[in-house]
Amino acid sequence: MRTGHGVESYQTERLRKDGSLVSILLSVSPLRDRKGTVIGASAIARDVTAKIRAEQALQRSEKLATAGRLTAAIAHEINNPLEAITNLLYLARRDPTRAEQHMEMAEREVQRIADIAQQTLGFVREVSEAKSLNVAETLDEVLQLYSPKFMSGHIELQKEFEEDCEVQGFSGELRQLFSNLIVNAVDAMPGGGRLRVRVSRTHEPDGRGRAGVRVTVADTGIGIPAADRPRLFEPFYTTKKDSGTGLGLWLSEGIVRKHEGTIQVRTSTQPGRSGTIFSLFLPQNS
Ligand SMILES: Nc1ncnc2c1ncn2[C@@H]1O[C@H](COP(=O)(O)OP(=O)(O)OP(=O)(O)O)[C@@H](O)[C@H]1O
Ligand SMILES: [Mg+2]
Image (cartoon, rainbow, N blue to C red; front, side, top):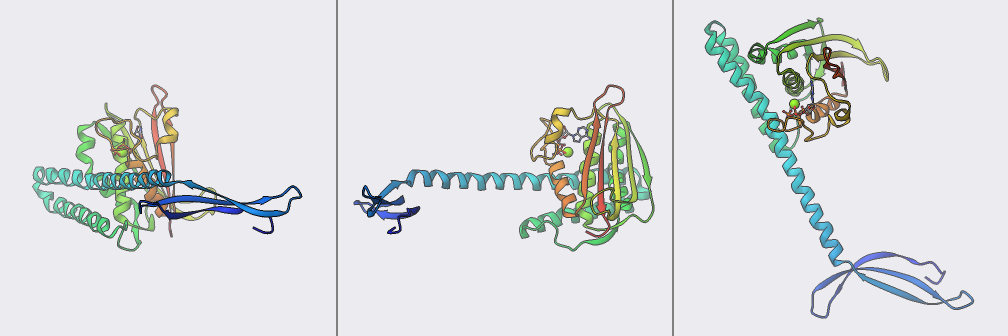
């Protein structure tokens, strides 16, 4: 203070006469005489109790919003395996010769739900470690789950799978990612259409040129209007008022990021040739 510098204001607490505490912001600055010599100090105390209360209330409401988001995310992740189990039970009943196989797949989906519950309790996304897995096989399993949906929705499925498409990854989360993209594609083709899925070995075109696997999911659906494109990966962004949570792509992007991959979208709303292609790159070693 004697050198003529002001003290940065700082926050502190003082006791009121009635005994209650008051938060104040204290700023102290030097007082000078005409020649500029420091002759004293002035202190300004501002009561900031109300401001601090408002900040605390905001923090609390943000925490609540986070809890709400988390709940919605869990519901979303559980919904896909539940739908898969429903489909598999239907298939098992219709075709008793393959019931065993369908039951086995249903069991895995039940395990997936158990994993989600476990992870939620532990607050970590995937408990296990990344393992070597075949992307084409994983995607094919998901496609099988949705075969009743393709049939009833008049959707023709085209698969182009290369062999040996292995990556280090989390199979449960990749299944979740693929189902989100497939369900979105189906939703975009209410009157039927063609779903083309491809898996191939590749190198990243730019950046580090890493070896990995490219997955594309292409539909002949309605496409995404230009105005909506920047918001696709935002949480809760949905155009499906009654049925969507808008968490599918947001969760998917998180899964891709966890695998150190990339996700891109190309889309057209041009009548007669509309459709959307989601293209993923998953590096071999993430
Ligand atoms: N293949 C697609 N074709 C056309 N629009 C799409 C496609 N994929 C996503 N969208 C658009 O992006 C929005 C967000 O997708 P996202 O998967 O995040 O949420 P949602 O599908 O609406 O809800 P949820 O996934 O919870 O069921 C969709 O509402 C839709 O408008
Ligand atoms: Mg979706």
